[in-house]
Amino acid sequence: MPDSISGLVKQVDDNSWLIGNRFILQRAIVAEMPLWKDHHGNCYSLADNISPLPPATAIPSDGYPHLVHSCANVSAVWDFGDVVLKIKLFQTRKGGTREHVTLNWLANQNPKFAVPRVLHYSEDEDRSYLFSTRLPGVTLNSAWPLMNDDYRQYYAQQVAEICTQLSTHSSTRIGGVDNGYLSDSWLDPLTYDFRSETLLENCNQLGMQISSSTVFLFSHNDLAPGNIMVDPREKYLVGIIDWEMAGFVPREWISTKFAVAWGLDLELGDVSGISEADWRKRVHQELKRRGFPEVSDIWKQWFNERYASQQ
Image (cartoon, rainbow, N blue to C red; front, side, top):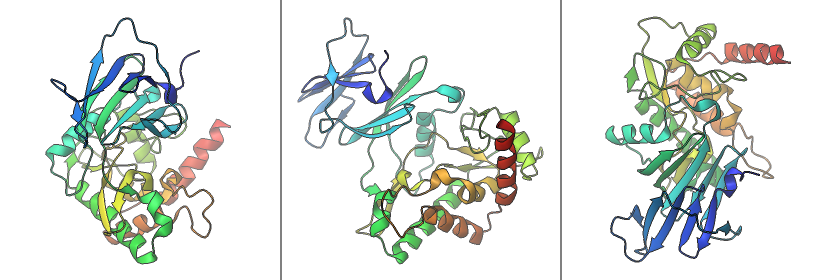
């Protein structure tokens, strides 16, 4: 039986880990060309084409590295302290722009906020492996319940400003920064056909009035509060993670996404008294104040009709 995606990192010994039955990650005091050095001075190096593979065991729940995220056996993220490893199945997104491509492109744009730095990327037939630097701070999602209304509105304004900054980058095509597919399932729900011609047809159905002269604007497209790193003690937005859905979209989509996508909701568990939609509704209103148009009412009707047709 194949490993679940959360079981693709295993422990060989105290200083080495087997990753996806493909790599060995080794930690040592000295290494000739380490992938990274941690804040203790330890060197981490990656070796592939290891044969035979060494025996390895599952990492305990309180072990190192720590599994910080696992989603529907499609993606998982491990925390190595200063660095994170994301393993993701391609599934319907094989033709999409890879996250490391977007991150490298962003680094050249000199954004006014932090983004992860790519350390290593590789892929095989059905999955990708991305090592990148870990941004400091905590997620906005975890900080939200402890914030007063002033802080919450501040972060909504900051993210709306980041959306505005990102939208200054434009393209004549819908898609990723390398012209790959834009893997935004909210633009093609249920069928997940991310080909440009399909997305353009859907945008026209949504009233975005796409023409040969349309300019598409760069957007993160997945600004859930779990993807925003903050330092609430200093009232400071550190940076943005998880750029795999980013790309050039119609101007209307930037605001509409916050209005309709419950995937951007807060995930608060048992915390009561807070609407899970509070975060995205605040950003939506801030974007409206900045003049971003929307087609949210049409999208809701369009989605309901598509959903009904699948039943």
